[in-house]
Each structure stands twice: as structure tokens, then as C-alpha cells.
Length: 256
Ligand code: CUA
Image (cartoon, rainbow, N blue to C red; front, side, top):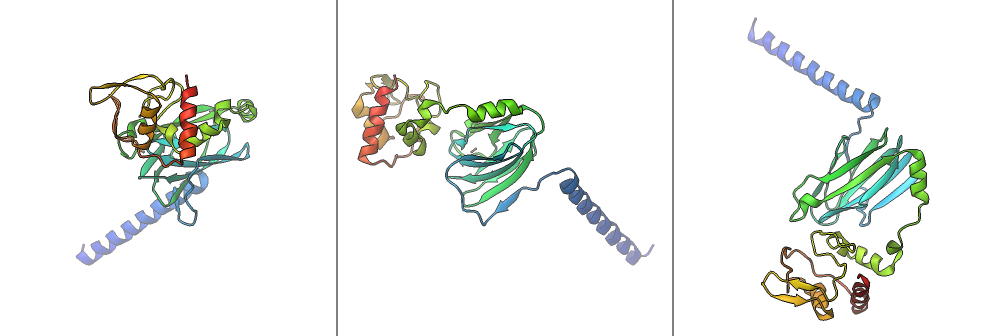
């Protein structure tokens, strides 16, 4: 066979191969509903997580990724629903993988990424950050709980826990304090706020101090001044008005 004929044959075979691949991709999208992740450049990135229930068959979730949590932390979805996930990042680049589905998106500051997932059966899914994003990366996770219709209706009607309607709780949430500090005693990236007033605190320097109001104020205003033993110096300075600082200090006294 001449070199020219061989070359022509190679070109024809590779063209056919590309066409077959293109056809299979089109088939996957149209017949099997394999969604293609999309970068939406015309949507302004949102700063607050949200779940919008259009109907029990169609939900929309806005995930905000931030060091080191996803907002919302838990999403409840009725089985059979299609969910549109929109993803943005507040600080650095994060990655979202919803294990057990084909949702795998990057969360990049400045843009919104999108993927659609249909959830057929009740099951818990774990959402993980798969892009190294700093000290708390490995703890960055959230949940999607797919439940039956009746459980979903009950969940929709259940009253919100009273703490979430508390104005100071909302302030702490808005200032991202609760990403790293729990109020229920559980360990996180930062020490828990539960029972913090009057607690004896061992510092990285080796000294032990009592968490009085002056200590708490300094730890909020100038977080690097006294680092608690076992934790890292990663807390950013909070931007608070004097009134907000007062409000938070009064609230901390109530977290016995
Ligand atoms: Cu966010 Cu890793």
C-alpha cells in the first residue's frame, strides 16, 4: 500500500472515531440524562447558601463554599426530584464532589458553576471538598439527604430550631464565626463557644488564662494575640461594630 493511501485511510478512520465519540456523548446527554457541568458567567456569584423548592419534583440549591464549610450544610430532597446545583466560592477555589452521583464541580471565586442531578431513591449522600483549600480542608463536608415524600413534607413543615431565629445567632452566622466555632460543645477548627466565659484556657505559649470578658474581646478583635493550645492561628479579624461586639459578648455569656 502506498504511503498516500495509508495516510488517507488513517484520516478516514480517525474522523469516524471522533464522530462515533460525539454521537455517544450526545446519546448520553439526551437518553441517559448525563448532565454536562456548565460554567455560568452571566450569574452574579451569591454569598449566602439557599434551597429553593420550586415543587417537590424540582429544587434549586445554591451552595456557597468557604473556608471550611459548605452553606447549606444539609439539604433534604424528596426522592424522585431533580435538583439544580449552583456553586460559588467566597474565598479560594474549592471543589465539590457529591459521592455516588456524577456531580463534580469546581467552586471558583467570581463565577457560578452548575450541574443537575436527579435523585431516584432515598439515601444519604456526602458532599466533599476535593480541592486542597487550607488547614480545614479535610473537614469540609456537607450532606444531601434524599427522603421519601412524607418525610420531606414533615421536614418542610417542622419549625426551625429557636437558636436559628435568635438575632445574635444570625449575626454570628453572617460573620462566619459558626463555620469554625460550635455552640454545642463539639470540637471544630476553633474552640467551642459553649461555656466559654470563665473557662480556664491553656495557650500555645504554655500559659493558662481565664476566659474573662477582656480575653474574649481580644480574641475577637485581635485573634492572633493568644492562640489556644491545639489550634492554629487561622482566624481572620472579625469586622464588627462596637454594638455588634457588645451583642456577641453578651451572647457568649449565655452559652453555658
Ligand atoms: Cu474547600 Cu478543600
